[in-house]
Image 1 (cartoon, rainbow over the protein chains, first blue to last red):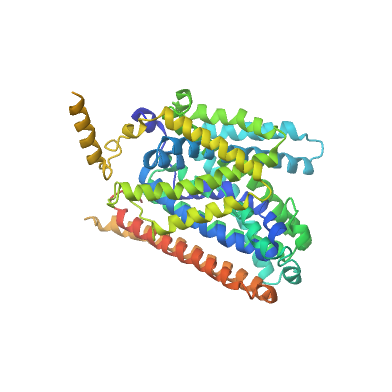
Image 2 (cartoon, rainbow over the protein chains, first blue to last red):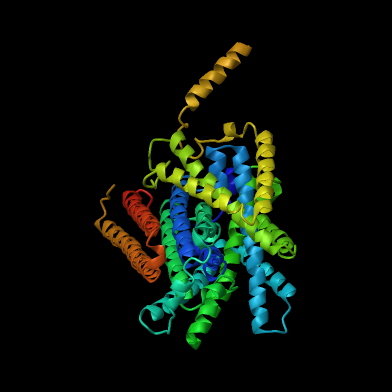
Length: 467
Length: 89
């Protein structure tokens, strides 16, 4: 990385921007998608999936907070894997993050177009999808502060809508059906509990991306941990409220296949203000998610380009707007390609598999980081996560368990993803054999990693022997 | 790390209290909302869930415990570095 490029990214973001990026991307999963857990495991399966996935994501968010506030780089999981694991893992996780967010952006844009069409039937889905993708690309091209401030407003409205409806239910403002909880508790037996886990990530998928704006934060060592943890708590609260209010307003068999479960729950309440609030929330959260995805996928591509994993042409920073504008613009054709591939469900599944791969490699990067840099100083590790590395191992175990559940129903997606990332791993490992030597720790203000003194002594001895 | 500027110290501690209040408020909402929902769903489905309810208690406990300790660490980190990195200027 050249200093000029790194210095060109504007450093203005605050904790609420980090919150807006993380929650903005994820909250859409609470407005739609999570309810497939109900189809697999009923209400009890869904609640277990919410808690198990929640435990994994709490740990992932803590790992991301520690790694993001330490490295302060735009690539997020890619940069952590590059610095602490190796080039093959870095390329795999960099591509996984890119695919995860760009696929989600495409899906969000299509849903926005469908919602717009349901309100204004004369609209066509194709041009509206193009318009949404182009508009969000333009906003991200113009500047990260404007993009994430917009995300903050959209996300806050969507989140408040959930809270208002939930408390209306708790305080008796809505007629509910508690009998739905028992009727649909466990329709597929104990195996359903396990099968429901595969859709548990929908409640929180993408929260780790909040740390990807670390390089553009004014004080990353405060903004990343505070914004990320606040975001994680927001999602945990939102997930629990969403599950409960949908479970007592929609019969379980209908909830399991609903396209917009929160909106449908509001319709079942029969109260106009709630229908309007959650209808608006559904629309805004899709826009916020697509917007955040443009931001994160472009940063991942920018970071890959900056280290020559892909063409260096994409690493240019805009002289006026201080954005990685070529990487931002490049998200547009790729997202359009995904959106109109005709395999949207496959694309979304690929996004989940890519995310789960990240959830194995992020805690692993943290374990390596702790091994390489065991001493805590304010320069190396300004935020020290708790209970590490034990909880990192636990998160890896949960991620692998959830990945294994995808074998039921998504066997070929799983195999394709393993082949894709396996090829990427070996190709980039071969191409960047010497990249560990390129890590300039001194430029980051860090000491040499543990054990590197011995390596340099051995290299010197070999060099002397050769002479 | 402390400074020799009382006005700055006062401002910093006030802002730190703001961050602390935010985190504690959200944690309280998390425990309250999630606890309410887990209790209500388990109570409504007790005939079925009584044989494996401990799974929910374990994972609910893990979520709250790890997130709670994590938030305390975030506060501690901000407190330790707020003057060094001039967080609130």
